[in-house]
Image 1 (cartoon, rainbow, N blue to C red):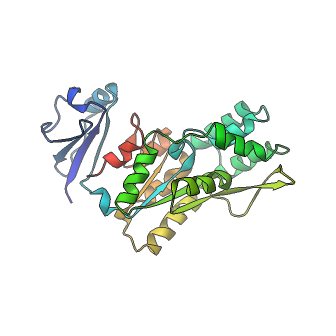
Image 2: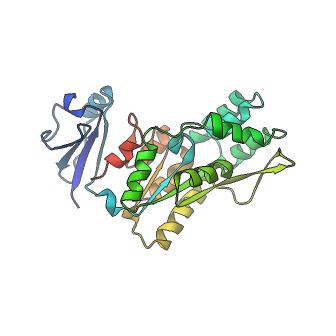
Image 3: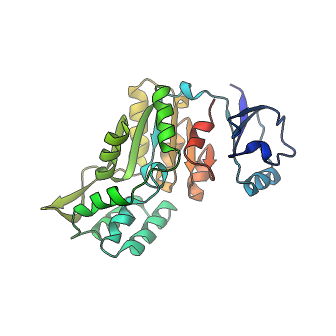
Length: 276
């Protein structure tokens, strides 16, 4: 399979693309430039800096049609949606800053995910369960381009799996609202409408995310190169590496380093844009 250099920007034809291969190559919708390149081609550091200065998302990938994929696996918090749900739940107890700092350390890979999750959940003890609905109704927003990406999945018969280290309260509602094929997350325990500060069931951590990807890949009879995974944090790294295409979205440095391509500037429509 041949490789292609893909450049994405809202007005790619007006960008400075000096020193790149044939920039008269196919331009799609004025936003995506696809340039066939030889095996082994890589952007120089100078080229990377110049593209980043213009906020151009760039990657060298196998030239693949989106319709050739069979499964897209997505993280939820700060990927499919714009927020970290646990931080917003904690705001109801005046603990957002404290919880958000633990979240940030975990996403950077500085803390063990399960330990940090249990520590944060313990801080939610005594909160009304209704706070979760308030976060869903008033704070949660889809990331730009999310609905377009899911429409493209449906149009090309690509299954969509949401797998999150967050909570089933949100993934279940998003699955129903968006018509997702699969959804997995952690379950907050509550009693009489009050959060207990504990979790129930299996913890969805980094390894569980990768395991679920492989499980559904095999059930669907797919090859690794037919699976795309996208995420932003350290706990997404195993699934990014297990997928044929690992896409980092507005990601922490460790997750970006583990991915095949990174969306730094565009929305989730750019995930679709890497493919024909």
